[in-house]
Structures are given as structure tokens and as C-alpha cells.
Length: 192
Image 1 (cartoon, helix red, strand yellow):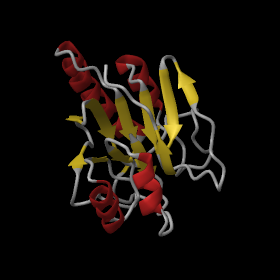
Image 2: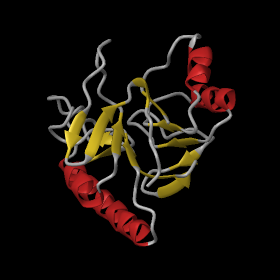
Image 3: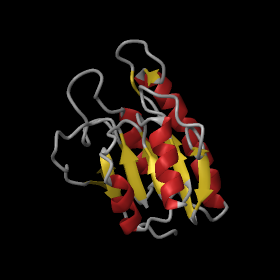
């Protein structure tokens, strides 16, 4: 699985991404539509996405915002947007995101009862205190911590937090690995 978010890579990304040979691309927001179309078409694999705080998502691929989708053998859940900091689109208060997360949790529980537990949870913003920032725009959501504990995905993949050239360390929360996908990350994910 190739996870991408927030930063458009230079022209060399086409050959680099092809050499990675992912089965699916997950996009965690704030990437231009044409870039996502190019990545998806160039790799000839499905794209699953959530919106960031600066975009509404592409016209291609599979939207996962508030949904659970099954793509490339994986069960993927998603929640887009960021904390509210200037009343822009795709920005939520903690209370609003709590309700969105609870709805997604119910869908995830139903999916697990049908034998399809969530493998990957993709969001734009991180969980509060687990790889987030201190400023209002980049704080994570407390409700994501509860969601991780409730549905126990193998991976929680987010964007939004720009590491300024450094690759942040992965973070563990219980059995879930939290990954910042700004730029790109290649993950080995086997369906449960």
C-alpha cells in the first residue's frame, strides 16, 4: 500500500512509485486532483482518499470519508478534515468530529461482525497527542484516540503534519501503528 498526503513530489515520482509496486494508493488529503489522477493512472491501481483541510478530494478514486470501503482485499475506513481554526471547509470542532468518529465506529463494528475488521484507518489529521502539533490548526483529535481503541485497525495513516524534511517515527497505540504519510510511505499490509 502506498500512502500519500499533502506534498506533491517532483517529476521523478512516477518511476519511483512504479518501482514500489503497491496494490492500492491511499491519499490522506491536500493533494491536487491532477496529481492523484496521475499517480492512480501511472500505477494502474485503485486510489482511496479522504479530503484534507484545503481540498474536497479528487474526482477519481474511491472516497472513504465517513465510510468503510473494501479495496484490494483491504478494509479501509476514513475521516477527512482538520481541527477548526478559521471556519474553512473540511474543518471540524472536537464535538463535530466526535460524532463523525462515533458513526464510523458503528460502521466498523458492523463490518467486523461480518468478518471484515478494519485493516487501515485513513484520516487527514492525527490523533491528539500522537504525532500532532501544538498550534490550533495542527492539533489532533481526541476522538481519534477513542476510535483507534474501539476498532483497533492495524494502521492509522494520516497527513497534515509536515515534518520539514524529516521522516517522523511511527507511533504505537495499543496494536495500531500510527503513520504520518506526508510526502509518501510504502506499507506492507496484509488483510485480516
